[in-house]
Image 1 (cartoon, helix red, strand yellow):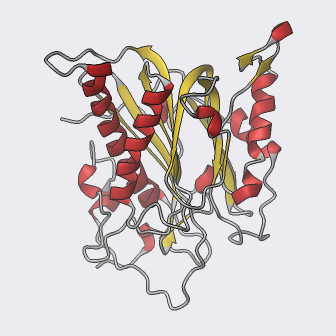
Image 2 (tube, one colour):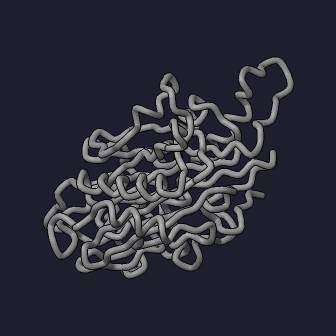
Length: 334
């Protein structure tokens, strides 16, 4: 039977902290994922409209292996500036890529989603200070989900999106977890059945009573202008190379595509990072085909995809209505 960690989220990975800064008035926010000891990083970008920072650095051929944080933000291109605050916050505490004279350069990749025009002002007043405030709130405890952080102003199809997280404990002793900000062009809800596409992936009744509802999706007369992107992070306590971390991020997109239909569109910038803390080695396989611990990596990627789909469902179920955008919980029953 599939088991989740105590927090059922990214903080089930030892050494990972998560923090949010939320501005309800601006309908935007920032979510930070910190690993001050450093985690081997990977990334896979599938959407055709990405807003990202430091993703080239994560390519397996490039020098730096470890990241100290990842930033997920609202605010589109303006939101990427929140990473500046995270970099300075980490540097002031001596966490980063070591340089001469005891100096460090924190490595903080970032991705942004499009939530412009959903708050008081068309462009939210997002900047480095929001990144600092998200860092100050970071902890290893339970993760707030729904309309918080980068998911504050998120929209999923024609209903409210948000932040979700989920984890899985593998039989090998490894742990895998996902955190995602769902702001998708596609829908998480099957319009025929009125329930999430991936509701069957539920673990330990994590979707609650909302996961047992079937709803009528609202009828929209005025189509919403394309302004989307789903961004997330996979974390694991496995020891991975950069190439293996990239492969796990790639496989996690399978869970995104199962939970959101359509996904990876021309109007989405779908991006998934992977952070591997290296606490446990990948188990060796036995038998004829044992290349580079491939079987263990397959299982890690499978779990990453399942955690991603569960996190996406949780993001939509836990969201609440904002303004004229209705949440799943407030829709009429089918």
